[in-house]
Amino acid sequence: MVAFADLSPSFLVGLSSLILPVASSGFLDAGNVLRSTVCEQIATEVSSSSIVYYTGSSQYTKDNYHWSASSSQAAECSFEPATAEDVGIALKILGQTQTPFGVKSGGHAANANFSSTSGVQIAMYSFSDVVYDSATQTATVGTGLLWDDVYAALEQYSVTVVGVKVTGIGVGGVTLGGGYSHLTNQHGLSIDNVVAYELVLPNGTVTDIRSSTDSDLFFALRGGFNNFGIVTRVTLKTHPQAQVWGGRISYSLDQWEGASSAIANFWANVTDPKASIYNTYNYVYGVPEMSIIIFYDAPTCPKGIYDEFLLAPHFEQDISTRSYVSFLQSLPLNATSGLRSVFHWVALEEITIPVLDMIANETRAWAAELIDSSGLIISYDVDPYLPTIYDHADSPTAYPPTRDRGYSYIQVYYGWADSKYDATMIEAVDASAQHMTQVLTHYGQDIANVAVYPNNAPPDMTLEKMYGDNLPRLRAIKKAVDPDNVMGLTGGWKF
Image (cartoon, rainbow, N blue to C red):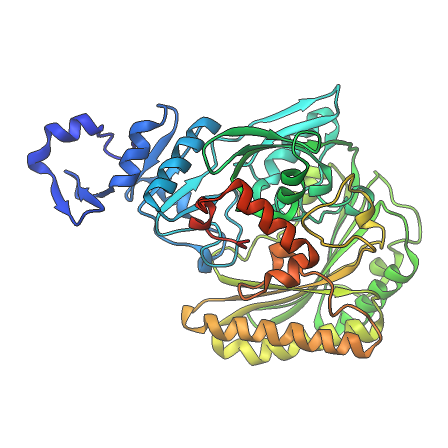
């Protein structure tokens, strides 16, 4: 089905005198909107519940919008499939015509062309169901949802799933890429909690992928993203969820020392898997600030775990007992929308005062260096995890390539305004990650070869650095399920 002027192909034939030919890829309709022949073919062959949108439609704008400006593009059209079968029809057409396409879940990818395209933008919004099964203690969720929506839908059942730590992130990229959460110390990554995927293969076939039905694809999908088709729904283990305790504490630059001490002591002494922190050293529009998210998975927190954070000098705090949904929605961590963006990822074996001082210095140095390159937000986040976080998977996964032990991590984020500095920013984040790796190695931390998290890797990251020894197996699976390389027409990390 086509939306925008709602002109069907048969009606357009009747208006042939009003249609102006434009090259061989499409035509201008009566409203002077360029209609791609591929988009029209999709609109003609899919069911009436699935819709193609063109420029000028508010839904086209929504479908092409991405959180990061560096990831946004203007597609020939956008397509919102409503059934897995219609996804299959579109995939066959795109493969036959060799048309580039993008697949968007939440649109939070930072790297250009990863979920956006100048071809056909597939937006998964119609896959927005959340079905809880109390008998199996699972939830089946559509990949068009944000995690915010999933958590809210499950709250009535007093359960939740392992997703992400912040608001505004889509289900698709997380359940296909990894998924670190406030609950990861207890339950592992989001992909460790996947029971099944509804997958549309590159040949258009709709199939249910589980460990028992296809162990190769089940391995590959958990960390291998969109190399093997388009996932429309994911079934996840659920976990009981009562009220939680925690919130945000903010520290000015002159208060960073006390906050860093609290972080180091937390890492050294706290082994309770219900406790989690998420710390960010920031320069926001030139202003230094640190935010620490403290979380305990119960209505009250045992004494001693967070006392130092609360006693250290700070200028703001919002700590209370509330629902898990309310806790997540209280954190303004998606305020970077609209900037150009790049991430990086460095592993940590230990979080000590010298390590945190190094991270703070890195934040200050690169904030000063990049301010003239329209660098508006420079953020270095410290994510402490227990070394047991990778013990929760029932079978091997594409990422991480080894589960011998878990690590804590530094997540680097740069946000800037001017596209002429794209290369400058990517070079800078690479240089910073390399420098921190060298310093950590000097401190005796064996982290130089730890796999980089694909969802937080810059666009020039190599597949070997993310997938290690799993890469040959992933390439073999990719070749078997997609011999014509249909999924090579879309972006992302390609095997």
